[in-house]
Structures are given as C-alpha cells and as structure tokens.
Amino acid sequence: MMKSFFKAPLDIEILLDNEDSRKHVHGNLPLYEDGESINGIVTLRVREGKRVEHLGVKISVIGSIDVVKKADNGTNEILSKKPLDQFLCLSYDLCPTGELQHSQSYSFAFKDLNKRFESYVGRNVEVNYYVKVTVLRKSTDISKIKKFWVYLYKDNVSAITTVSNSLSTQQQQPTAISNGENAGPAEENGQSTNNHNKVADPQAKQIKLDIGIENCLHIEFEYSKAQYSLKDVIVGRIYFLLTRLKIRHMELSLLTREISGMKPNTTIKDTITIRYEIMDGSPVKGETIPIRLFLGGYDLTPNMSCNYFSVKNYLSLVIVDEDGRRYFKQSEVILYRTRE
Image (cartoon, rainbow, N blue to C red; front, side, top):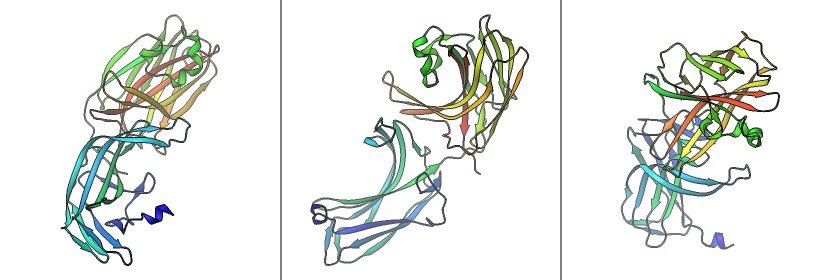
C-alpha cells in the first residue's frame, strides 16, 4: 500500500539499438565490444493525470569497478556494493528544464566508445557497464539504469610474460592435508622444492616444468605454450623419471585466482574452473601420460589486471599419495579472448 502511494509519477524505458538481434550473455545482457557505439532511445512515460516538472533530463554511460560483499552461504547473494573507481563517465542533457504532460522519446548516441576493461563478476570485485537516465527534480530525482556486457578481444598475442612456478608439499602439515585442494599459493602452504622462474615466450613450442621431491619423486610436466585462447586446447605430457612415492591418484586443474585490494590488505580468492583426473593408481618409472585439456565449453575468465584487482589463471598439478598427503605444482597460463 505505502509502496504504491509513493510510486514515481513517470516510468523510464531505455532501449538499445538492435538489442533484440544482438548476442546476449551473462543473464541476458546485450553484448558490446571496445570501440563500439552505444545508441538507443529513451522514453519517458508520464502516468495518467500526472504533470511532472523537472530541471532537465540527463543521460550517462558509466563503467565502474565495484567492491562487493557476498553471503557465505553459497547463494552469492550481494550484501553490499561500493563503487571503487568510475573509469568511464560520459553524459549530456537530453532535454532542458521543463514540464512533462505526456510521454516523450529521445534518441541518444555515444560514438566509438572506449571500454578499458572487460565486464567481470567475481568473488569480491565486479566490473559493470550501464546507461543511466536521470530526471532531475527539486525533490527526489528519478533514475533508471540499463546494463550491458563488454568483451575485449585480443586477436594478436605477442607479449612475453614472466611465469613463476612453485612446488609445494604439505608433508609437514598433516592438519591441512584434507584442505589442500583449496590451498592458496604454494609458497604460503608448505615447503618449496625445485623452484623455477621462467620467461615464457608465447611462440615457444614447449614449456617444461620439473617437479621433484628428493629421493621420492621426479616428474617432467610439459605443455605446448604459455598463452591460450578461451577456446583452445592445452596439449602436453607428464613423464615419470623417479617414482618411489606410492601415488593414489593425480589430477590437473585450471584455477582462477582473483586478487583484490591494495597491499598489505589484499584478498585472494581461488576458484577451480576445470578439474580433470589424469591418473588413478601408482605409475612406473618411464611412464608417460598424455594431456589434452579442452577449454571450450567452460565459463572461463581471461587474465585481466588494473590498480585495484587482478585475475590470473593457473595450471595446477595435484598428486595424492596413499597416506592422503597432497603435493602440487602451480604454473601461470595466460588466457585471452578471441572472436568465435
């Protein structure tokens, strides 16, 4: 009853050009790319018998990085959202001060719009784009937003990326073994052995990682390159040079890591997007296991970075021995989006 009593005297409708024929993603939002114009029509519908005085009507296109707090009950319900950086804000007046006595429509256009970041919904951070219409009034303004989604395509990837790899074993932390698959960076959760820092040229034919536990295990893990499109296939092999450790099973995962906040108050959230069991049982010396990990068909996030947060992807090789102890090696891979 009270809600209807305070109902706004007009409705705002925002229609984007060719919205019905445009591809929709992530909850049915229209998809745009960098450099593409945002055009459409705004309709202000005055309720019957109403006259609306206003101080002007303004339209804006906004891109923002928002910090979100979500419920921990698995529902991802947003408890709060706070703007962190409004990296895009363009606006102009649709009409001057006046009075609305009947419905009116106005066309709008933001030409060749530069979009710096890809849209993103993470655990603690979001990147949102939307068109906002505001009817300015002496009392309370009336506004409405229309969200859209942005993809950034990279057709030519030629940058050389430094990739850091580390091996961790939780042998000395038996209380944390059962939670090893959710552990953070290897350096923070156990002893580091055979640590290598490599500069990975995306044109290189192979990336080779040595995994070693002294006098127990020596594995070579090779994969074809350091950078992959979201529709690519990770091709590689695992070669066992020394196998004194009794292995129960081995799995390969693709892990997405969101790092948000400014040092020293950074927050790390890991999400396993792909998990693939590559071996069940103990291998023998000289055995080779081929790897083909298909990325297409999964909802993956390309690597992205700014001053406030970053998203990185890692290949994670996990070995579980017969006593339930977990050993893992993480190696960063660069994921990027190309046109389908």
